[in-house]
Amino acid sequence: MRERTLLEFETEVLDDGGIRAFLCRKGNFIEALFVDPPFQQRGFGKQLLDYLKTQYSVIHLSVFAQNPRAIRFYQREAFWAVKLNQHHETGETIVLLKWEGKQ
Image (cartoon, rainbow, N blue to C red; front, side):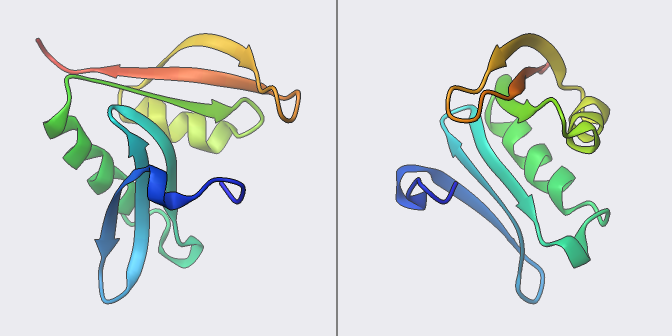
């Protein structure tokens, strides 16, 4: 994220007395979802995903395979792995995830 400008993304922000979480996306592809560590596990990430789910019937994202906590979070939110790729900048494995709403 550091190398990219946030201006190229659409951004949703959760403000609960201060910015607690934000989600950056290009259309229905989530580029980043961040929750301030002291505010994790309070439902802020879920709130951002729930909002996005009202906007799109299909949502995609990728996460590093060595981040099982993030993968479990997305799986609880009904995102499922559809493909493994190699991240060209780091050589690490990334998991492509997809959520599909009811048609």
